[in-house]
Image 1: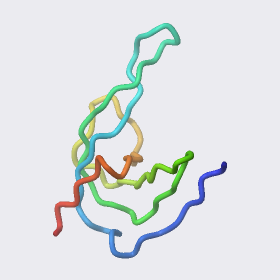
Image 2: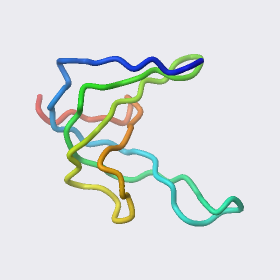
Image 3: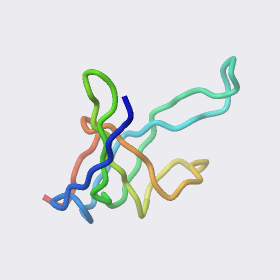
Length: 86
C-alpha cells in the first residue's frame, strides 16, 4: 500500500512537540532507531501507512531536535504529536 499524502488546514502552522524516530549509529546494520524530542510547526501534511493505517504528521521549522538530525523536517506518528497552540 502506497502512502496517500493529504493536507489538514486546521493543523497547518500550529506549534507542536513530538517524540519522533531518528537513526542513531550502532547495531548490526550500522543504525539503530531511537525516540527523540522535536518541537516545531506542523505543515498540515500527513499520510496514512500500513494496515491498520498509522497516521504520520510532518513537523517543520524545528526549534528543538537531536543534534545529529540534519533534516529540516520530521514525520511523527499521530499518537506522539502534542499541539501546543490550543
